[in-house]
Image (tube, rainbow, N blue to C red):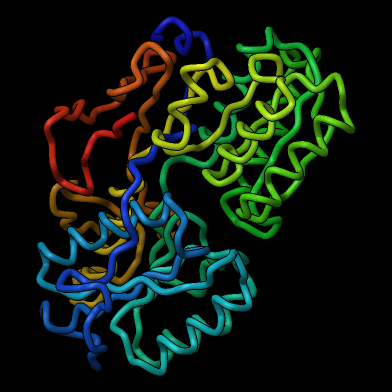
Length: 375
């Protein structure tokens, strides 16, 4: 496994792996407790609401579990609300509702960075703290952005891994989520730039399609790609909904192992496809840590420990001290990778001589924010 990734160039391997978890409510129950007014002071004012791109998504469910754990540690409250499908307009409605409820903080993953900005600015004007996670909003519409990993590394590594699998030859396509998603567009931008390098001259990106994080749409988009491009050799799907739907679609037309697939997926979703060869390898940051860190960042803002300025640092519980970087961004850190040879335990990656500083987790760890992924 290490040999596979040592030759990919610098950066962290990033297609990342999730642990399925049920979408949770507050630390004390599913409803999140009654909203509390006031945005300063101690734990009693930690009334924090998470607004993902869509609810009932395994990725965000796992992030919610991490946030619930953080809420329990800080004796705050947690609730998750949001649209059933990825919709910026519905997110705006939820932001307005949360503002009317006078929550202490809104933690949001944006379907559209600019469409959400006016409503978020109104929330900030009323003293509500705003943290974005996973997919950023306009920088002037939040105080802190908790990001999974470096966007450039994520985008480039996805192309590097697929290139290695295809021997740098053939037509490829990208199955994305929403066309307005900040993180997806950033990753795709770096994918295209990586593909412009001489080593990929034998590969061509024929199409980028958008499944909108909808299972059936993503499934149909994959079938359409396979029909429109009969010589298609590989697909990158940097979305947990998309990669599972694409794998199912590829197998439905008996092209498993013939059309390479990689991207971001949950281990429970991808177990079957890794074992039967439809997917050779995939990796992921721990989304539980993403939610956990986002909750701690929101709490630090509420308590006045940080304002979101670069250089500030705050305690992030089990994750230690985290520092705010340029543009108000806080990074989780290195991702982990899975393949057929190690389906039950993540392997820390160190490419180009750069080795992650985080320790490998023990298989018996039980924290929702640091639990190893189980295939």
